[in-house]
Length: 349
Image (tube, rainbow, N blue to C red):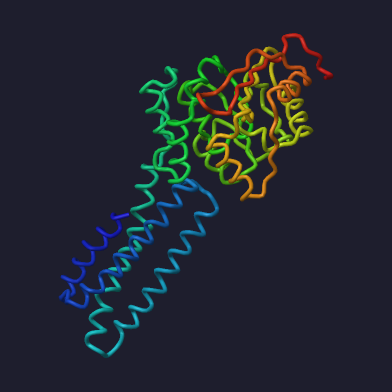
């Protein structure tokens, strides 16, 4: 953001020197305005790059036009001062016109080239690494670098505090094609991609903002779409692993049954279904569960609590064979449900 300001400062001083226009005290006082405008223009571009990337997203044209019109309206005002009769006002106009003009040139000409380099997608080595290792964490960090603050902060907290990511290696095995239902901000997808860049990921989520961010994380080689269970998208190839993490409490029994039936069709024989769900315990709800329930109530979303036996029944009813069930973490209500599609199955199920 400081690059257009530095460019404007150097060029403005050069123009004033050539025009023999002294930089007076009122001009120095008004330079704070130029500082504010330069930061504003740059922050709009940087924020747009964080949100939409540096490609040809249609919203980028709107942001550029808004910045351009704001700068032009300011320039018109200072041109009016420069054309006036009052000596002080004329002096201010002559100082501020080149200053604002060079800020605009720096923002539109220098900053985009720098943002293209800074926001270039991270090159991921093709060799797999051990999950949880320093190399794995470094790869995840590179995937999230320079992106929007809230999703990046959310991912960092999730990866550090949720026991899911220390338990997944023993559950997920070595997947090739992963179907992530309820992918959210792409945290699980980033974890998988950093572990093995050869994994192909298809993710879906009903929230457009989360889909946009997850698509930025995964890149064009993977498929992230906006969809809500049980309306599952068609996959380019059958998945060998399907994950449904912390999302089945958003859908009813009928919707969950329909979702599982759709998953069954889209899976390879011997494919693995991995579900993590909150199961209320006899000793009451945990603090984290109360926070989640409060968030759901605020958003006026439906919530469907199920016992362990009810979840097992819904899974096995759709033809899956249970492999294991286990508790996630210590003192938490989340439980793992791992099932497998049988090797021999009926296509007309």
